[in-house]
Image (cartoon, rainbow, N blue to C red):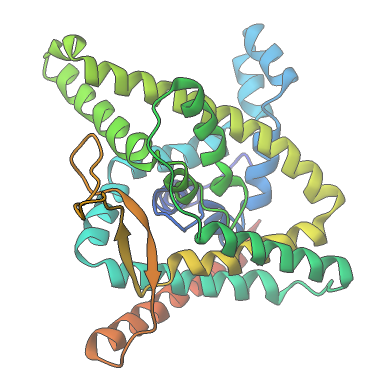
Length: 338
């Protein structure tokens, strides 16, 4: 690991964290794909793997510098700083864009995922019966997940902890969207919108000297939910990183083929041309959640008609491809200077 990163390296690492955080927020998009394409996926997994018993011994014994160096703290710290910034900035911008320009946002991500498939596949030459089978299983699982119906919201703290473990799968497993899994589990709005907004509002209140939120039962509940969700996410990150590190070391070709399959399967989730289907009551009215918002049942995908809007969408798909190519070129330059 290079401990003497230049300022530009540090800045780009924060930007990569921004990219991962934004990708993790969007259902159907995987932050792990950003890490894979940008060329720091293995360093990310191996750094997380260092959060183990030895690391905690160093921490408990007060050897903070040794602990920081052992877990590749500068790399992880800058990356997670970017992710945190993303949740309070880029992700909010994405929320706005998806609300007002949904087709074009999905088109960009669709193009990025197609570019990611090309990028990962172009240097992979170990195709055999096992890797082809792994590819097919990855595609089947990815497509199967994309057509499941979402469950109802559940704020039980044990279930929230489980959601935290599952949600980080998108960071560690490229092509596997943690945010889309949260939609299927029914807790996307609760965990990535309501609880995050509660934290944002609480921080604003504290800085303004307003502590009335301690009497707000809903706010306190959301903060508890966010704390448990974060604990579950950290647990999942460390657990998945150890498992994936072992798999990458011993079954790299099979794992890579599976990842390609997952990413191909995820194209069904981010297909730009889809209509949202909402759940209905027996009388035909929409089912609403606790916030009075319509509950999503699934999405109906369709083939677009040729129109100006369709041509714009295709242009944004090409933009997504260009973004991946730019990331690849930057990654190659980084390798040469490493």
